[in-house]
Image (cartoon, rainbow, N blue to C red):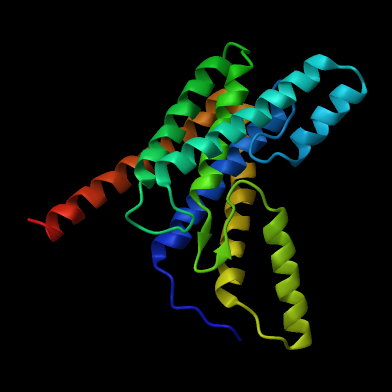
Length: 226
């Protein structure tokens, strides 16, 4: 059995909140006008190929725009945080606040059936996914599940063989999976009742997390350096 130092509670709580946010956004993207994923790019790249292959340049342009928006979100996150490992003290509050602003703006445009709403939501997901990169040597992604389901399957295979298992990775990936799944449920139920306004939930959640994180770090710095 492989052991890590016991991770702080905020790693699990923050991962759950962010995965729930992404799952909600993705469900709304699938149920919305274009029926397209917004939190991960595998399907988007496929849509880009389909659009070009069928000479459906409108579809191709929309897919390319979502891809570029997600990429730009990653670029912005990298410029803000400037660190590949997840650690307290980095500028996560700023990144979360920007994600929240992008999601609030996306609701405004999606209410008017403007494609820029999709692009803003995809950009918010790219920003979030790049923000949460690694923790304790384990790759963490909160906006898509493929890699984590793969790693969970590998871990179960190791258990069946009696091979040592990285239990921290097993637990955190399980939490992220449940969060993304729960977000899908929230997004579906919310969209059926409120339409695109459902995105106000992840917008508020990421905004509260960003502001709260910034306030906590401010008081911690004042306490350390009175």
